[in-house]
Amino acid sequence: MMNSKTRDIVTIVLSVVLCAGAAVVFKPCDPKEDGTWMLCHWAGQAVIGLGGVMTLISVLRFFVGNEVKKGLDIALIPIAVFAAYLPNNVIPLCKMEMMRCHMTFNPAVIFVSVILIFAVATDAYLLDKKR
Image (cartoon, rainbow, N blue to C red):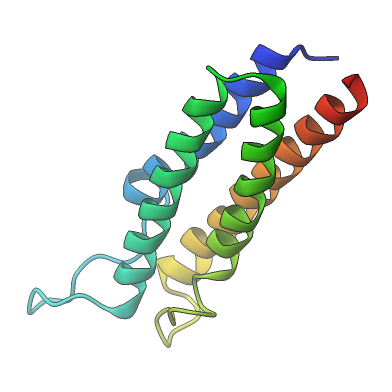
């Protein structure tokens, strides 16, 4: 079983992967030829913002006690759920299903968010069990 600091590092890494991945690795579509952006760009910007907030909270978790850490774990869960729900539900993606935003961005955001939810829920459970 991983110790608490290792779980903190895993949470930080997953939050950074969500934030940086949405900006660089699995980013949504590029701008149109006229330089304007499609709606999926704004979904990407929102995920980057949520990932930044989750990264900040994850870094804070590294420096606080177990009771506060459990509270931050619980706070991360709805943020990660919203990050997974946001693309194509709150902010529409491109109309063509074969675009990068549908094929790469949306599945990657959902995958990383679900892993992050699992990690912080497990950490909160283990912290509560330790008490």
